[in-house]
Structures are given as structure tokens and as C-alpha cells.
Amino acid sequence: MSSAIISARGVQKSFGRVDVLKGIDLDLFEGQVMCLLGPSGSGKSTFLRCVNHLESVSGGVLTVHGQLVGYRERRGRLYESSEAEICRDRSDIGMVFQHFNLFPHMTVLENLTIGPVTVRGKSRKAAAVRAVELLDQVGLGDKLKAYPRQLSGGQQQRVAIARALAMEPRLMLFDEPTSALDPELVGDVLAVMKNLASEGMTMLVVTHEMGFAREVADVVVFMDGGVVVESGPPGEVLDNPRNERTRAFLSAVL
Image (tube, rainbow, N blue to C red; front, side, top):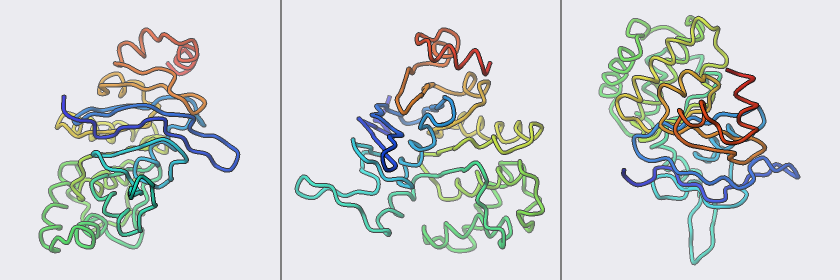
């Protein structure tokens, strides 16, 4: 197994007097899929947002690809990076949100090409060629000229995945990507994610889809109250949890 893509040691996050993350320790290695499970308010999405510095950590050390995200170390002290440096740090990290976050005034093709052109410096032609390939990959090759409002929720989420992939990330973050979808639309999005996993994409996924976690995850992490309660292969955590809190949660959702 290669080196850790994400390494967290004692990661803390507080909002005012509320401690949301209370010391997270975990490692995600290249090519792995890790699913974060747990009740609402357990800190799963907050940790995910810390990975690409949408939230700054309050304590501990969090690195991606061996580098601090959002900070630079000088003479033993940490300084918050400039916005340009943070953007560069994020360029290898793709993120798919719960509510799509597509640009409503842009076509599907424009949504996919704006990042590679403006951030990666690709030509519009090269970005468009890659966008067409990715849309074919997620089953939406016929939607190039459509606007987000003309697509179903499941289609918008698949476009959001393709848009993230257009940046050629080494790591993909998914924040409950199916929770806002009607049940009949969930399968198409999960199929795209399963295909990514089969191709070796490193993925950190916050999800309530237990079937997906069981089938695709290499590591399942159960969080509650801002801490990692237990983690391990899905067969162990989902079928034979050691912690009573994990057992209570799974009995309620399975």
C-alpha cells in the first residue's frame, strides 16, 4: 500500500464554544474508498470540509498528499495560506456536494470547462473534448447544451461529479451526494461512484447508503459526537460492530 493521501492526527474543529471535532485520527491511502457513517451532527461533513479547507481546523494536524491544506509552516509556526495558495492546494481535490452547486446560468458543457480553463490553464478545445468524454462516462453525453434547471436532480449530481473529475483530481470528496435525491434517482449516481472506485479513484464519502458502503468501501468509519467511535473493513464494522453506540446506530438504519 502506498503513502497516505489524507492523514489526520488529533484534528479538532470548534465553532465558538461548540466542539464539533474532538480529535480525529485517520489515514486514507491511495486507491482506497473510505465511507464516513454516523448520525447527523457527528462531525462527518465538517471533517470533509476541513480536508479542502472550506473549514479551517482548530487544532491537530491534517495533511493531504503530505502537505498541509490551507496553511504553510515557517520556522515552526503555522500561517494561513493566501487565497491563491489555497486554490492551488484544492486543485487536486474534487468535491461533490449534497445540493449540486452547479452554475445555473451556464450550460452543462460550460460548467465542466470553466475550471480546467481558468484554473488549470487548459485550452477551451482540450477542456471541451475532456468534458464530452466525462459526460459520456456518466451517461449524459446528450446534455451538453442543457442548463441545470432542465435536468433532474440525479442528472445534476452526475454533472457535478463530471465537473469535479474535469479538474483531474487525485482525491474525490463526496458529502452525502444522494441525500437530496428522490429514491429512484439514487441508483444512477451510486453507479457512477462505483465505477470511479473500480478505476482506482481515492474517495472519501459521507453517506447514509449502507449498501454502497458495504459493497464499495475499503474502510468504514463510524463517527459520533465529534470522535471516531470505530473503524475497519465494512464486513467488521457493519456486521460485527464492537461498540454499543455503533450497534445502536446500525440497528436503527439497517
